[in-house]
Amino acid sequence: MSFQGDGKPVLYSGGNYVRATATMDHAGAILTLQADGNVTIALNNTPVWSAR
Image (cartoon, rainbow, N blue to C red; front, side, top):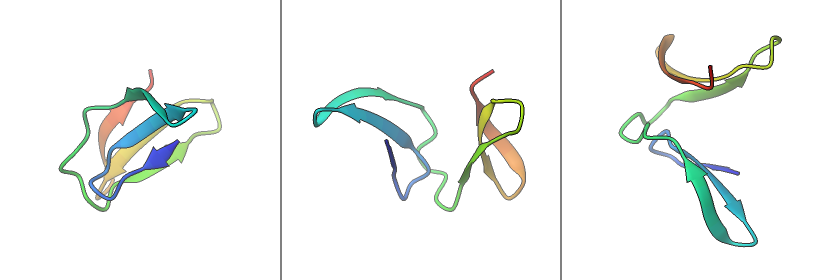
């Protein structure tokens, strides 16, 4: 997995694209794995994406 500078995580397998979120244009965003297993992306404490 790669977390790009524009705030978009991209999953690769064997060098091939597998999946990504539509969270580009969020430079400075933070990817967090929460204690409950949820994965979130937030920018300035505002959620922009969640796995749930």
